[in-house]
Image (cartoon, rainbow, N blue to C red; front, side, top):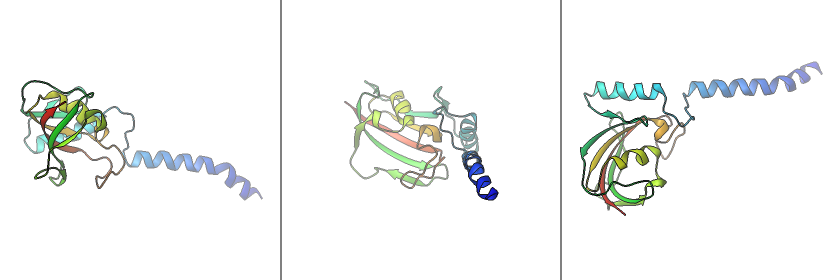
Length: 160
């Protein structure tokens, strides 16, 4: 009887301890704020690959390849883009290369795009280096492992 009572009393503490351990183990940042570790990881990648990029106050890095002209989008706009997404190991995980231009509401995509795409104007191209917090976060998403730093090249074709 005492073993059963001990188990019932101890179970919530065991579950809590396991949950804390697993969130620490997978380095899940669910605060919505980019961590210093995420910024350091991108800086390490950029340095190792001799890439010069600007750090945005939002916690990502970028290179404006071509600034474009005219209108810069806001999250309220619909945009048409050509893009390529890849991992830091160079593997492309998504692209519309050779396919039609993709059109979507900017507010409907990952936070890193919402912050980064408005840095260029129509006709411009930008490289975005996004920490997990501004990409797909801690969880796996359509073949993208959780906690992935992602690199996007985005060409802004049109702003509506």
